[in-house]
Image (cartoon, rainbow, N blue to C red; front, side, top):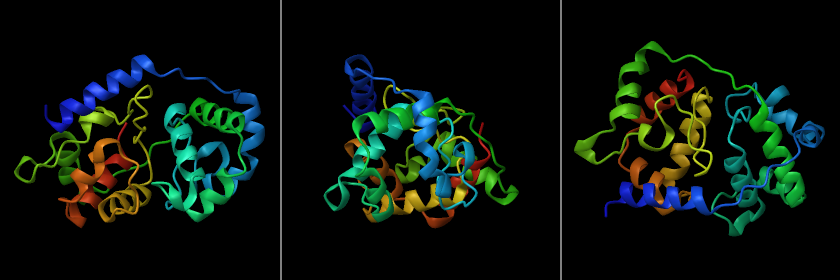
Length: 204
C-alpha cells in the first residue's frame, strides 16, 4: 500500500471512529477576546504572518491547540501559542474551535506571476519529483476534510502558508500524519512553495 492509500485509509478510520464533541459557539466568542490581537476580529488576521482562523475546521483547530499545549515536547512548538494554550481547559479549546469554525472565511487574491505554477502544483503535483498534489487531501476548493482534521486552506494568507511549508521542510513542524507534508515539501523548491501559497490565497 502506497503512502497516499495508507493516508486515505487512515482518514476513513478517523472519520468513523472519532467522537467529535462540539463546543459552545457563544462561549467561544467570549473567550476569543485574547485571540483578536493576532488573529483579528472575526478570525481574519490583518498581518499575513498570522493565520486566518475563520471557517477553519473545529477538529483541526482543536488538534493544533493541543499540540501547541505540549510546548517544547510537542511537534508544533511555538512559544507564543504555548503560553496561550497552556492556560486553556479542554472546554475552552472546544468552545474556541467551535466559534472559529462558525465564522465566514475570507478569500484573498493570487499574484498573476504565481498562478500557473501554483495551480499546477496544487492540482497536479510534480510526479517527476514525487510531489503529491495538494488537492488529494485539501480538496479542489481548498476546503480540507473536517472529520480527518485536514485543514481548510482556501483564502489563507500566502505568507503564512509559505512559512508553514518551510517549517515542515526543516522539520521545525512535524505534526503531520505519516510525515505526509514533510515527505512532499522536502522535494519542493522555494519558487514552488511560494507559488502554491499564492495560489491557495486566492483559492475558493
